[in-house]
Image (cartoon, rainbow over all chains, first blue to last red; front, side, top):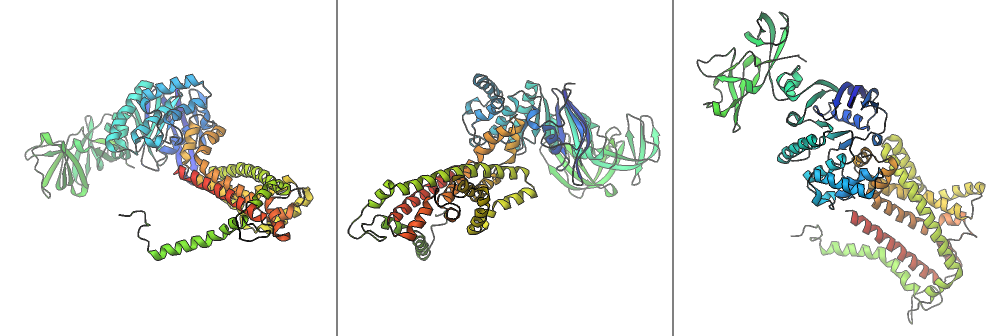
Length: 358
Length: 263
């Protein structure tokens, strides 16, 4: 199989399982993001793929060949490090030429390939500069050119944008996506930034305590998360829980805190009496005007509001249900929020997402 | 506005500082004065300045032999100490565990133990190995006692070296040897050069070991000076001292220069 296959890898440090029985594969040309909070094991997993950390158990297979015990220099994987790790004593040209030089390629071959790689990241004009004479964004591009110039099997990226300011980050995200389409390589991208993961990836694997909690396309994970953790880590979610009291066509009714809610499901509904948790995106909850009704309703008091230009972000205290975060587009609202005002929140039966409690 | 922190120093402090500088430097300058004396014994010049003792130094067979011997021994022991010390420091840095801390500590033993104790030990040992009064014997002794300087300076340089550079090099396909040669060494060069300079100076004016384990075939410059002072008060000694000081100062200047270039 063309691509990387990770099967049941585990890495223990003393009593701490940094990576715990993880299996996942990445196809050639795919953009896979390992997303998770710090300490979730995503970087350790990446370092195992790169060969800097040895797996205690499990196997890594690259294009059909087992690489579990190959040293990093024999794996032919490109890597972009956090902070870029450019060689400070070498010019941009020599940094990019480095992987070709150690492969003993001819001078002409090196010159051609380095020029092509620098063209790819639009840095041809700066070939003679030293890394410290470049801006953060430019250093980032040199690191990319250096990691791609030797035609690696895969490109590994360890939080490559974390050191940059927000605007530059957005620019470089687009550039990375463009580069990914152009070179057609598999990218494995580690980040803790869920927005970055959503906007760039073909597939996201969400990690927590050394395990992959869930993986799927960005839309899968945002719109149909299976766990409360993913529902809250990717985007924001409000949670309502209760126990199932009745089955209906294409859904069920559950009751929590003395209120009945209806919820639609695609699959089989949970058994009567079973506990359920529903995750609700802030943008799927509306503020009901007097006289308006919704399939699910909940009363509360406004405790905080923020005007963000395109939307109002409200925090509503719904008594026993806790705080609700609600976002309302400003263009469709004649909302004049006032702290302490009574509010009725409403959402449709299709809005909630049934998630496993953890 | 003065921002360098030296602008507001009072005259008192300033004169104290110069007093200390004089205290440190003046005794050394006496040597230069004595070396150009016109008398036949160790004294300050009276009637005029004469370079006869420099001439004597550079034309005298024994002195030149000693200078050459010292130079060969210092060069050989420096090269070996730098090679071994650098590799040891890099090895400890790469391991980065308790054992490597211990090894680094162990490496400092030669400068913690009084040289005379060390010399005595080596003397005993060299008798059995038949290394007394040989180039090899003295070179090995100077390698051992010069190592700490290299280990210290290279370890310091490595403390400021980003370990991700090593990982980057490996991930780009460089072997460990290539990584060492193309990435690690160039980035810690100032530390290696400092270590080399200190190791050289150490061997160049080392007396105690030379007294114990050499004596006839190998007669280093400090050894000859020692004998000269004990036996006669020949002003040639002052000329030798002046030359030695000049060499040491120029080496230290080189060291300061390479350090400033790194910053």
